[in-house]
Image (cartoon, rainbow over all chains, first blue to last red; front, top):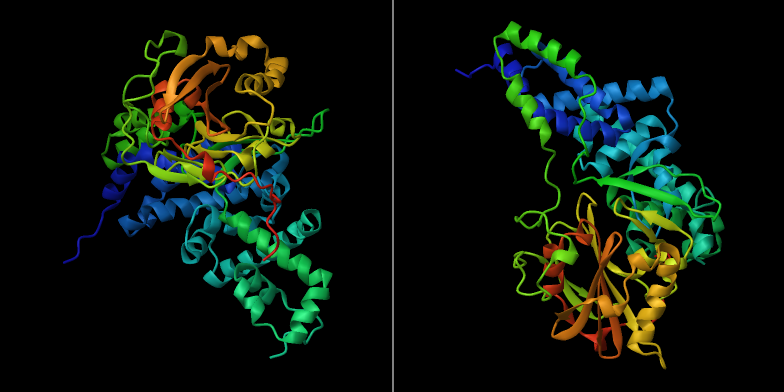
Length: 164
Length: 332
């Protein structure tokens, strides 16, 4: 008979790994654009996860489940505060040959496209995993990535004239 | 299929061509003619190529663009890299969160929070090859002038061959490696665009010309660069020209004269080593070239690690390439 993790087991797992989870989630939230609120959100995510631990069936999926909560909380924060990217800590690809403008263009993408780009290109998650975290289909992620790519290509097209 | 059906080459086809130059060869003659004369298509093609280049670049945490200052200098400040730590950790609402978690723990019969919180003190290690000894003493107290034998093991380091500057060097595995793409020169630090990748300020020209290696958390950088000794200029004259703008900016206290430099050897050549304000430099002349090795960030003070880098250097002045190139590669 397959062993089923109890709520106590899962809650204990969160408690036991609190430190490591906090560090991982703080970094994750910063990458998503939580800026200086990353640590607060990481704590909130752990608290929410701990409170709703009975909804988690598979102990293996603890981290993806917490990341999903984190994505939702960061999205909510950014929608609420409308924070200016010019003042935020942003997780961006940095290539001195392309210059700052190219990097900043990623931060200016619309929310869903930016999150898809950060999750897939910045953090290296697969499209399926990103879809799970964003609560959309894999096709939705692919579409967001393509839209992001199109917008960035238009932003970066003027480089051609500069380099000629 | 005629991809010119709507008057232009569709964007997905342009995106594909940007990633795979061979796809361009598969265009028909009419499509190629259209592409060559179509500003929109060429612009988008280049745009998509830039996007691919951008997504392949290392991702870093960057505080945004600060406004351009009075000197027209635009600054970028990188804080930590994707693979690095998360920086200083602060429990912003400790009492509230501890109370809530203790309550929850009590409810489910677990009580492991104390140990868990203790672990918060240690952010993940990010620099892969730090020496295990205690932090190195300040340069002025170091008695040993010789860079070898190194006390930091380098056998597992990654080798790097510089086709630009004519040298071989190894760096800790996992460090970000960037090869210089254009010749370095004495005026390159005066170029206006300045970057700060978490270590110190660098001109964009310096980052494009120096071979440099950065710890994954951007706490340290080692750079290797140099140039052919200009005709009619002595090594001493070169050093003077190298130091003059720096002394003008930071004062002679930050750039001691060569008479005060420590004598070391690099790949069998007599060299000088100097530590100043936020940097350590080693300079050596070989085969009509001057090589400069600079450590920034933690490498400005971590003598053992700096020495370890120098111990792996092999100079090959004949292999250096001083041909100027366009820093921006041409479209595929």
